Amino acid sequence: MRTTVGQCNLLLLLALTATHESFGQNWIQRFPTTSPSARSYAAEAFDAARNQTVLFGGLSETVSFNTLNDTWVWNGSDWTQKFPVNNPPARAWASMAYDMTNSQIVLFGGFSSNGSSLNDTWVWNGSDWTQKFPAHSPSPRGIFTTTYDSAHRQIVLFGGAFGFGSPFLGDTWVWNGSDWTQKFPTTSPSARGGYAMAYDSLRNMTVLFSGVGSGVGSDTWLWNGSNWSQAQPSNSPPPSLYPAMAFDAVQGYMLLFGGEENCCLPMNDTWAWTGVNWVQLQPSVIPEGRYSEAIAYDMTHSQVVMFGGTDGSGFLSDTWVWGVSEPTVIRTPPYDFFEGCNDTTQVASFGAEAAAIVDSNPLTGTLDINVQALGLVADAKGQGGVGINYTPPLHWQGSPSNNC
Image (cartoon, rainbow, N blue to C red):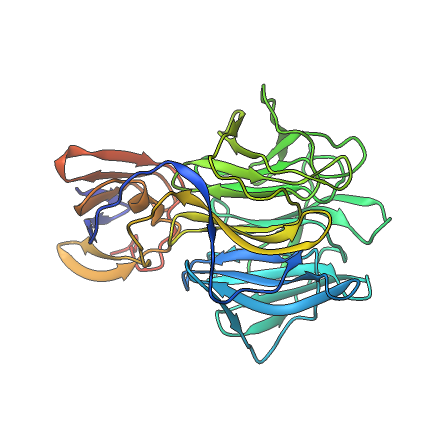
């Protein structure tokens, strides 16, 4: 299939090497040979450039308010501790998000071991941490969340709190890879912390749910890059503090799990946000109720990865994935594609986010992808006439130049 982007005709041919079968989604406990210690309030994000989930820091139960600064990576079957030359100071209640534009994980803020709040920015390149010194920065804070807005190619941060007992914050900031910029939307969620937030790449919206703060309940908010709007679903999960949420790119919904209800009551319900409504899911296997768990979507293995948290009486060190019951295909993006431009062919690659196109297709063989424009809709059609429409933005890590 060919289409025109600017002056360039593109022919993209992607080879699939194995059959991708569709199974029902369920929670599956993993039993890795190596694992991080029990902890809660850790930061977790998926590193699409290196195809691994990264976990940093958190709160250990070995000593009262003992924050951690260890770095771990999950490859789909086991955890491996990394020993970088440079490490951010120990912290919990921080947040991490993967900056796809710059191929690095960005860590911001949190609370240190003495309870003081932080506002430093660090980036992870797969082997080492580097502190950034932006001209502008959000104020020190913890119990907030960040997520990467792929439509606008920036990390979004909302709210949090300066410290325990301090007033909650209700400001919105974005990170462009080098600096933080405060946004001033006309509409905004009320000041809060301990909420769940993740980016819905199917609908190009950042989704925020619940948390704690004055007037906070089971409200759902959407950020479109310039303004917040409150959603009006007919069904909603109960209000919760420190729930975990990640977007399942293959299933096309936001997955929400757990949280703390009515002060220190761990929840174990699973919900999906469809873009207009919340639907409670009924998996046959359910993890122990918990809150403050770490969560991220593993694009390589098409699974949400959840680690640790607390059940209210102790900290946890278990690893769970939400995905197919028995995954039969292990994909290793970035996949190669061949770019035909004016009848010439060159090899490039695209990032793991776009690999969801492949994961969505139960196909074997060659897949022709018709790319309509950079960052817009891709229409995929496989042999035998089976096709999909996939709407999240594509971000090339190759050279589909508009000027060839």
